[in-house]
Length: 511
Ligand SMILES: Cc1cc2nc3c(=O)[nH]c(=O)nc-3n(C[C@H](O)[C@H](O)[C@H](O)COP(=O)(O)OP(=O)(O)OC[C@H]3O[C@@H](n4cnc5c(N)ncnc54)[C@H](O)[C@@H]3O)c2cc1C
Ligand code: SF4
Image (cartoon, rainbow, N blue to C red):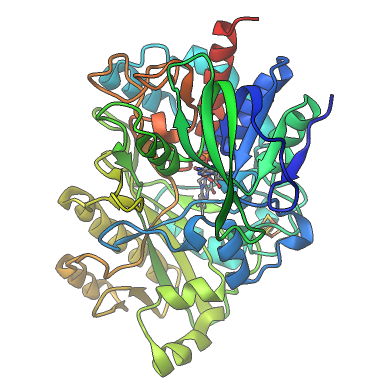
């Protein structure tokens, strides 16, 4: 039996459906679970609030694509407006709009999860086959030398000139045409993301996917049959219309760390840990201006990472330190990040072809919180702590040194009084940066935590099998369960953990 993708904004669904397994979210976590369970003969239905966008539907136009492919039309942020919280909202999830870097979960991280958080089942041996499967699904290969554009090469040149360590990353592209718009989807369908791997395999095994279907509430979480109320969205995904109900024996939440927790909170489910322990893994962009063309916006946006300052095996945190990775943005994004407005901003954007840019990425203590306000509005609270800001100052100095060593005219630190670094002696000004709320272009692309896995409900929101405490048969299979930042890039770790938990669930389900 072959499954189907049904767009509920165009086609009516059968009312009061009953299924074995209902999955919320079709990204790395959800698509993997759907495939594994459907291949084992389970009747699987996946709800996805985004639409299905492939090939030419991915138009490379900033406005339309951020509107259609991102959660809250890419306007989501922390409650103090300090960090833009970016998440995919499309069939296939964040993999459709990400930059394709593949970094598996490290053994030191797993060791931290066992030692500090009691996740004794998360051994290297237990996870190894699922980690290997994730890398196969992603067709993970090193980015070829010929595909390194000038933006990436300049970061490498400066790093090597200083004698620091760095690496060309693994990626999940096959047949990349170097169009450069990975962050708003790949019209060449070159990304081996869930839309082109786990979803077709799940469909072949009979799973059904409903798009423009937003899970609103979950009831009867301890009963034999749980009920999920869903809202059918309009074709643009902006408004909820008709409400439907689906009943399922098992419910798997894989709606991303923010939305899985929000759905539990809206449903009045879970213990006091649900919503807490949020890691946003903040990233801060930095721009360097050269006297020659860089053309960062053509070719693979993110291929080279500076690893000199990473600590893969910090005794308390597992992965720690900071990492610097080249990045390029479409004009809309770069224009909003730069510190100049109006005519001046327009004038400075003339230099866009001569910009090189990077993201400085910080593993963080999982200290944020997701709440749902009385009005139903989502609220994300997160404070950039002093310790992290200390690492941010060190990262800005390191990035500036790298770009100056590569021959940059100056390095721009976006702040209320933009900081221009032209020489080593300008670096002292970085110590004066105040990082006041909502003044710098912080982003988060790797949300984790919120329904932390823990062996006891005194310490987390779900057990080590992913089952939410206080429920029977409701699971979280995405990064919500991660007790710390899993890796500098979360796609491969989520594929790995979802496969691990799906196999574990299968072993416990009645045949
Ligand atoms: C801009 C960007 C760049 C990134 N770059 C990289 C990278 O290069 N490498 C890497 O490894 N990682 C990267 N990531 C992170 C990675 O893509 C994500 O961690 C990963 O895709 C998350 O997988 P997930 O299954 O947990 O959630 P998602 O992929 O976010 O999937 C969740 C899905 O659930 C849907 N959903 C949410 N709520 C509901 C609801 N109530 N009802 C129905 N559906 C719902 C959403 O629409 C979404 O499609 C990036 C992320 C972003 C945003
Ligand atoms: S750079 Fe490659 S993967 Fe990215 S959008 Fe272009 S063709 Fe697709």
